[in-house]
Length: 79
Image 1 (cartoon, rainbow, N blue to C red):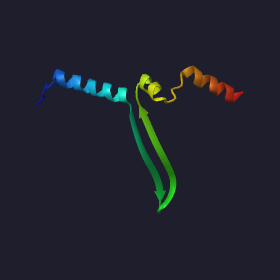
Image 2: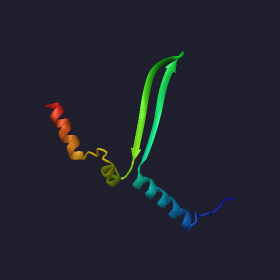
Image 3: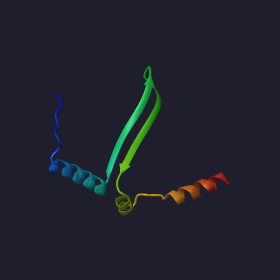
Image 4: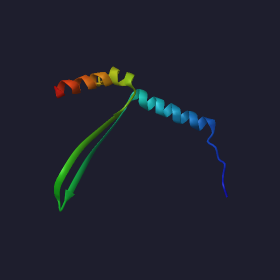
C-alpha cells in the first residue's frame, strides 16, 4: 500500500521561513568530544560550528575570508 501524501504548501513555506530566519540570525553549535580508553583521555576536541549568511557574519564582525585571500595566505606560507 503506497500513500501519495504531499506536504501542504504552508508546511513548505514554514520550513523555508525557518531556515531563512536561522541563517539571518546565525546559529552557533558548540560541543566537546572526548575519546578515552580505560579512563585515560587520549583526545579532547572542543568544536564550534557557526552557520549563517555572509551578510550576517560580516555584520557580527566574524572573519569571512574570500577564496582569493586564503590562496594568497597559502602562497606566502609556502615561499
